Image 1 (cartoon, one colour):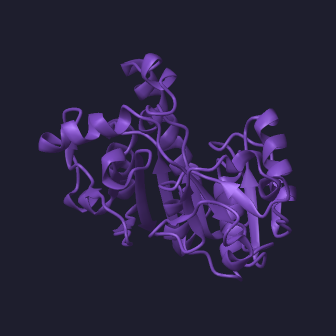
Image 2 (image 1 turned 180 degrees about the vertical axis):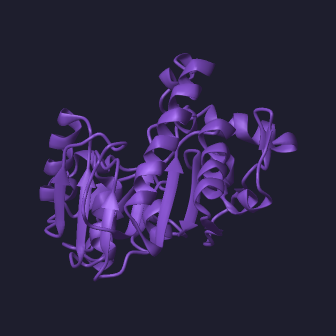
Length: 281
């Protein structure tokens, strides 16, 4: 990060501004005009930053909006699902990205939303119902052993991670951070990608994302998958600030194509930290 470090520390020293996405399955931007303080999120047409307590609003209760961290909206946008696609969301709860995928697909096609944790699966089901999602089926499985005869057009792997990108709103992530946690996460993430890629159609697209910064959980995982399966990395472009992936770290040197992946730090756009890789089979 170099000279930007002070900008980063200043950004994480204060809570991030809230953001929400209008649920286009139930409402339009015009329906919400004047209801909240709204500043458009440049990289997501139906999303806004706000200073209002939208999570306790009637609009949230009715499923007209989904309170979602703005940088995380890039994962579904990068996947670009079409209406007729068969999509797998391998680590789906609590449902922010699943419901965004459903909205992008206009409730057509089909989504398989998988979650290993039963309590989180119930939260996922609640959010799908609240948002009026009808093109999604739920599965309760370990993402590393999820099995289906289907082969998917698009797959999202929003992987469990060390959560360092959320430090401004979740200081506990820093307290629990250690090398052992990073190693466990990296091993799990590689296994998740192993299984996801097995279920991806030739020519299909997979988006891998985390909300952390460690090379071991980001570039190392992507480099592993690219090297093992011959995947192609595609750049994610949009109206947001970011920097490219790191091509060396943890004692390793990665493929130069790993620089095409996307790192977002809090000082770039006033959001949480996020990592994103778009892979083509």
